[in-house]
Length: 202
Image 1 (tube, helix red, strand yellow):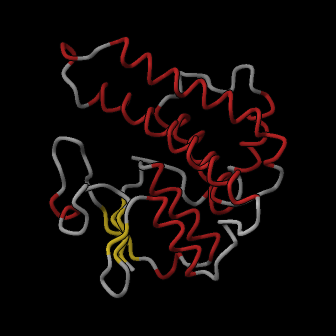
Image 2 (cartoon, rainbow, N blue to C red):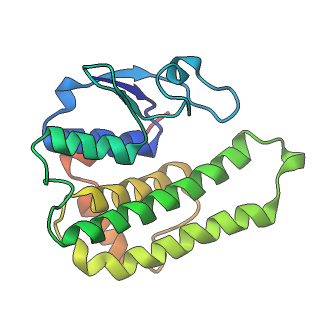
């Protein structure tokens, strides 16, 4: 399998953390790619019309995207049910994934606003709205915290990747302030091998 990859992408991190947990990382060839909202990487577009990372090309040539689809494919390839629960807890894990993905979407929009859009075209109220999504998602994570425990599934992996991305790109945001429980959970979770091996970098 071939994965179009950027070490800074939290969505790539999610896929690779899942692959490590499932023992499939050795079967994935990573191909560095330069996904960008303006200067689009034509190498990725040849596999995915959206030109985004992660995009996975399977051994039989099928292209899979986005991270949610890829992670579920890997879970099935690894035997099924380890990271995507098959019982009633499945829905909670999927909602956690969705909320954490939404936080990441908002964070990436803020990142692009600061790095890809000329300063004279930036709109502060729009950015404030995205940052508010981050704040409300973090508040939701806190309500879910008692159920995280020692779980390692698609819900907790995505939440962990979201918090890690805030550390990586929004270090001055201070998401830990007033969130001691969430901070303590993340410190333990982020030390797990699958998370430690996939920390984002430029």
